[in-house]
Image 1 (cartoon, rainbow, N blue to C red):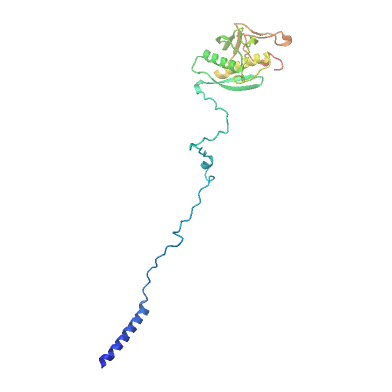
Image 2: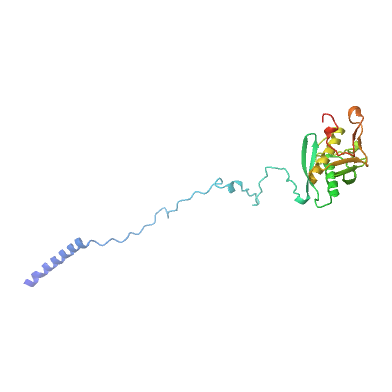
Length: 241
């Protein structure tokens, strides 16, 4: 009798123990939910904006490819040809003198050559630049300076020695024989002095004598450039130069 009465009591006690255990021990954590795929498909990452052509200087200056895929080089802003480079030991300067104006031009002249060869090279280069045919018979070093001996058919002695050159060859235009003759002598003198250094005296002669420029000067009686004295400058021969 007592045995059967204990069974319901045991069952009730077990139920109480189960309920108490839930309050003190807590409920176990639920398993993590599995994410279901969205009906719209998988999510896409946020797009990063592309860099524009203005972002870097290289992109702006880079030439665009043509239809064949080859890049077309950028057009130059200047069409002026580059100046010809001359080695230092081959470079000289021509001085073109016209009154108080002096213009300088590069020329090729071997500085390792003899003094006379360098002188002939410089005079020939000046003749080409000025449009004048300089025929030099000889060059003499003495009297503390240098003597340039022209032929009677040479400019400036002979006005017919003035050459007709294109604008590409000529560096200055002259409008009369008087101006061109003395500009030639001023230019030769200054070019030689600057090239060899110092104030070297320069003499000009015509076949060993004085240079006589016909039909020049007051009343057209002519002008004489003495070969026995160093040449000075045009203004010493022409009034108002």
